[in-house]
Length: 207
View 1: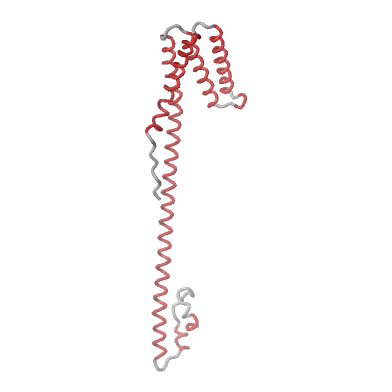
View 2: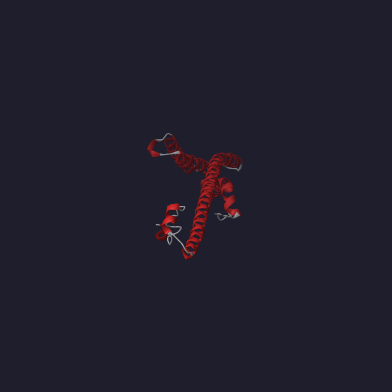
């Protein structure tokens, strides 16, 4: 069977590729807005961001170590959140844009490095699934062809048996009309065996 082709919109295809840059850029913009609203040189705000970033990073370390039922996805999310908080803190606390932009570049590069790893894994899984699907489809098609050939052979055999039974019936009818017909002698001479399915109307006449 032909499977329907699914065409994805270009936005859906491009969204995963631009998501890391959009995320780090959003954090940088929000940090600069925070800077313009009084976060610059605010020790309290800087201390809050440091505590939050350190706490999230610690949670990520515990998750990476396998404690608390964590896994790799939780650890990566925690580390990404910690980096985002650190970037927001620097963007909000720093005077100029040099240091925030430097951290933005580093954060974006790290985000793309982590995302590329998951993209490669997802691509390998997709290729493996497509390969298995193709193999299963070919096996099913092969099985269907064999069954079709087998059914065709059985139908052809049934047709030949029915044709032979019809010819034999006509021959017996013609022979019975001739003078000197002896059914006992015909039975002793023997006839080819016919199945009841191919010649049910001849069964009483051949006994």
